[in-house]
Length: 338
Image (cartoon, rainbow, N blue to C red; front, side, top):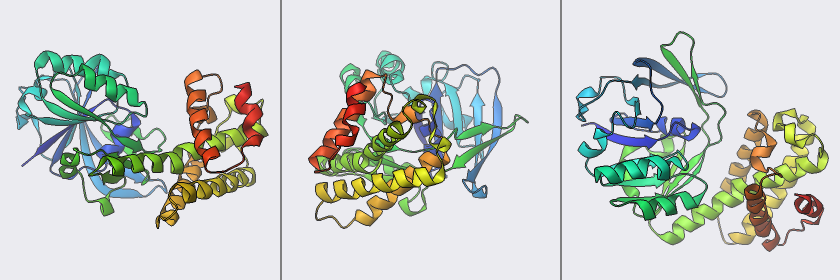
């Protein structure tokens, strides 16, 4: 029997989630864009070393109005891109639907108002870094339960629509993780087992477990990202805004990475002193920093010194570093100048 999982938005993360669904799951990716014609794409997954993955999908960008039944599902096609307005009937027929939101404020601006008008029930996990979106959506929603999840998938332009118009190539990065909050174990049935999945799926049973996962992501990914940006700003103060990490010479980047990893280990040991997962955490942080270099990540995506919200996030990260007993005096002038 086919199962249907909704994804709101066509962000990079949406394509990462597609890699992880089990074969009986039909993924419907909703967006507000209008498709000029119906197209079917053979979808190939390519690892970062250029080798092709054995996992195959077909993606159909569908313009035709559907009656909400699963009769629209074609054999061999399990990813559908659809306009949320022309296919909104799917919400009504999929009783107690499950959805993952990757559309930032589109959740509160588009999807929740639409669902309210249809009196639909479902469970939505928002994977936006801005947790105010899930809070606002929860307050606005009449019948849907909205939760905040944790996501990290570091990928570059994950999908390429090939010129022949019939194939798509998705980069299977094999790095990233999603953490589902308590009360969201119902999503487990849609995804392949964790050991086989390119994106690690973690399901938490208690709020304590979930908050630990949130903090682990901060320590392993977000704070090292900010520290790396500060290091680059010190070395290249005038070039920073136009730089990517790929612009940095390997020897210089490796030195930055080493300094950041030393601080990461100290933070992890401080916050999780009796933990046996230090090796896993170091590996996660190392792989993340390597991806910064490999994927031409713009430095200002980590810290934009002209953005008040980015500086607010930076200061939060630096408080985590300070509390771990790490001297960040060298960064003070840069942070203050921002």
